[in-house]
Length: 390
Ligand code: KIV
Ligand code: ZN
Image 1 (tube, helix red, strand yellow):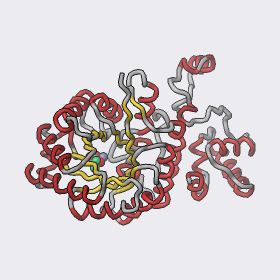
Image 2: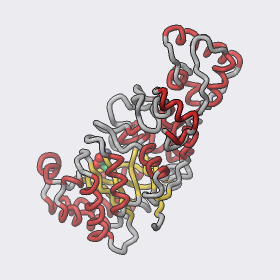
Image 3: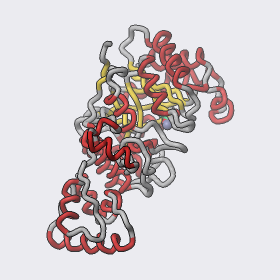
Image 4: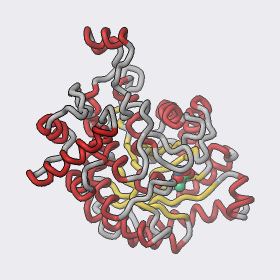
């Protein structure tokens, strides 16, 4: 099978950040962006500059800071939005304007109050203006999966004619099914892309719990860019989870012959950093990064894993950056074991800080039977956490 390289477009700082409980301040966004760069994502969508001053500043700061990735800024296809996105990206080493417009009849009638002809015209004009301001333009047909396919293809063709080189087909409301989505991507590839040098991107929401499955199906249909978020955060039920998508491609390389630039050992540290910044954690049974993802409780499983981890593990904890260390930290643990665990998690404390963190640990261990990595990270002062991510 021919091996294609998939580009990972991370939208944790935009689609992820705009969901309840996930807001981040400027320094937190910059720390997260640095970690995303270290993780190896290809594109960081840093914000929606017209939406707020904070988003504008975040796109500017990430553009200054992250020189080895593409930095994307979101905008509608209206002049003010596009100009603001271009301004925020002015200093980016590799800028991308990401402009979007809805194509489904329901959005045209109730949200945009525009006819199909008007939308076609807006797509063409918006992308042309964005192309004048940036060398790389991505166009997204919002609510693509509930759009009339012929009209969707017409709008995407107009965007491509105006200079968009990445066409995104979002499943905005998490409605599609894998086989249906694969077929839609194939249709767009045949009818719109043809032999033009244009990439197809996919962006799936998780309302039916299918965001990763749909993204994988889309790869089979011809998509070469996947939009996702760390821990799957995002509007409503979230976006496709970056770590799940990447590990599905990695573990099942036999059936999914795609390459990526992600350093998988950075998946867990990235997930932890995000959880420590926003106000909620992943569920314990979350694939790849949940605290139970590599825990074996049943005796029969424990026995099998001890004989050979492959009995019940399809990937090693180390391959995603989870330490295999089996020392259980509790109220009887000493300072030494605690600080060693912190070193493994990427935190180093000077003597005074170490004493303070140990006191906090003992207080916590008095209240809580099992202390997980998440608990340890939660008691690290915010300043130290941000430094560790720097
Ligand atoms: O879900 C969606 O359609 C989006 C677009 C702006 C890409 O987030
Ligand atoms: Zn979205």
